[in-house]
Length: 220
Image (cartoon, rainbow, N blue to C red; front, side, top):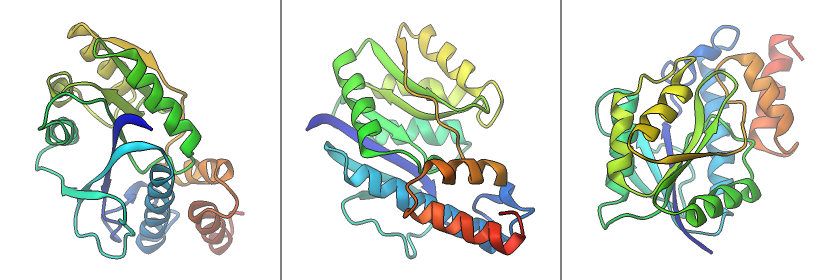
């Protein structure tokens, strides 16, 4: 088991608040359903990864989310960069510990991939960070060893085509070496959901629900 903690940052899946860029073509209810499926698959993968602790950093009420095996903490107020920095800081109150943060937009993650990411972060040591980028210019995973390193996230504009580039530059400006994790597509628009679902296990929540929504929309 690696001495890494994994944070999953997510919104509670609520129609009109979750995955709004899936609409159109999805209804708000369909978009929230896809979000719930993605969260569920992501949490399953983290549960099966041999790490020391697992935390969900949640915006909203848990509702019907299955959160067994996770410590649940609320997100702070502020923009996304501020909330990401705070998530790392809250997770490291006992001191520096290798911490891998992921979102719920990449439900194709597997325990094997997360184990690789955790082991790379742990073995690389405090002078390094690990970053998993997405084709849209964002990132799906970030691993750090200290809250001080994470503080720079509050200065990085998020949800932009250059977010990953800016994140890397901000981390390198603090003296860190940034190591690359595998690139993954994240779910923003419905074609992304279709592509991600194709990479998920056929029995996964995401694969089944995206297929059902695509059929309902006549897009299969």
